[in-house]
Length: 152
Image (tube, rainbow, N blue to C red; front, side, top):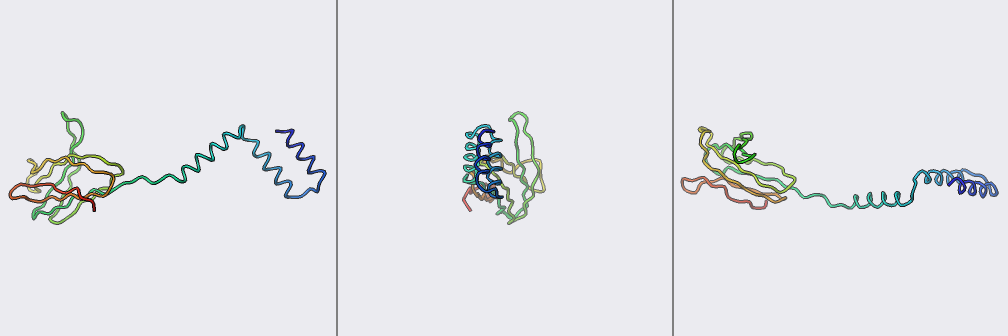
C-alpha cells in the first residue's frame, strides 16, 4: 500500500498541490487500515441488511373482569411438582388487566374470590400469539369461565 501512496503522491507532485488532492491521499491511506477489502464490503452488507430488518411483532394480553365481584388473578409457573406462584392481581368488576408480551406464549392462572384466597374458583391455561388478545372472565350460571382470546 505504501507504493501506491508514493505513486499517488508523485502524480500529485507533477500536478498542482491542493487541499483536495491532500484529502484524496488521506482517504486512500485511511482505506489501507482495512487489511482486506472483503471485510469492509461484508461489514457494509451486514449493516445494510440490518437497516432493512422488519420489526418484531408483539402484543398486549388483556383480561377483563365481566363479573359483579372482585377477583384475584395469580400466575402459576415452574415445574409441575413444585409450582411457583406469581404476584396477585386484584380485578374490580369491569376492570381490565393488561400485560405486554414480546413473544407468543402460554400461561397458567388461578382465579380467586377476593374474600377467599385459599380455594381457586378457576384454574386455566391460555395461549396467545404475538398479537393483541383479550380474555373475558365471566359467569355461566354458577361457574366462572375464561373466554375469548379474541383479537382487539
